[in-house]
Image (cartoon, rainbow, N blue to C red; front, side, top):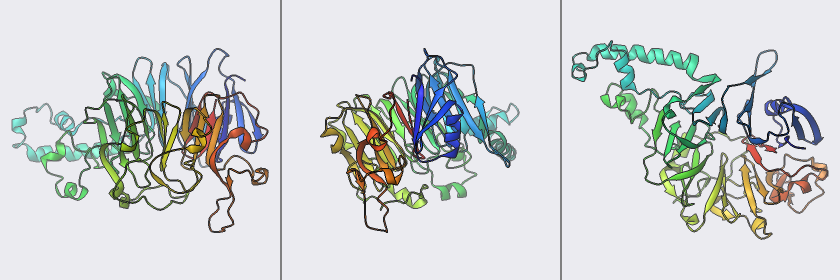
Length: 470
């Protein structure tokens, strides 16, 4: 049925509740659910779906959108709907923040801005100081008024901190990102945990948020030097950090390469240049950037190990770097999860790399790959893939016949109903539970025997391993 949504994957109370609130829902089998949107007519299609840890956003073909968020409380949780009377062209989601690009090319944001990952806080310190010097705009008087300026700066910083704590860390309503008022955007990648990337119509790239693992593609400031030199004038330089050495304003990436697409994992980014080449920067601890380095990737991570540590800084790619192994390929689509990445070529072939302990790379093994590797299971069977999506422990593929393939952790069906299919890995080793993994890309209709549905046109996967189809 038109405008039916399907969801399956790891159980997620918040997102499942938001999903069921959209309309008439039905449990089909195991944790597979469908919902028919009750608020839209037959002539309106679903264009895109994005979600954070507590919000679900659906973009419709008429430019309208449905945005719902769960608000926790001590007694019970409630679901609210967030609206804005504007027409939206594109949407993007991060760990706990959302971006909406309007038809008239205005950028809006919602959610967590604790690291300026939305891009709301972009007033440089020089402007703040001038505003608090009571019309004293003569730079020649700075030395004479140094003590007064320091006092004003301290007061200003205290006020800023109070404002951040009270207002700027979390935005409950949709607000415009004014930095891009005069800059036309092509796309936004909000997929980072604490950062975002913006690509302009002219192919230039802007970044903002946390740069802890060089995920902004710019110079990291030495923290110890900053603490010892807080009074130095270089702290007022527009090119340096904001109030915290890990919070960055929106800034243009210094490169002559032009880009038209990108995707962000928690701490890494991959960008497609206009000539189909792929570049990356950020954390490469598990090979998720696909860039060959002089160190080995880390040993497989546990499913509960979701946070990076300072020790990972040695695995960072600090600036825009070409994926040399793909220089003969023309890449058209990229998807990044926390620890692995998926690329789709113009020929419909799929390359995966990074963390593979849950068989999420689709290569039939559970090892990590440091360079992009083609998925033989798909190419050998002449499956032409049109779309890709991935979460931390799984990967989805949609081919040109609207068939969905799945590999990685099996959050789909009950153990007793797997029938020992060949694509399941069943191990006798009690120390490693590989019995609940899907080794190679497997048709969803094979995994869910009674699954009868209209062929989907789109797929989206949240980083918590819950999947959407429509």
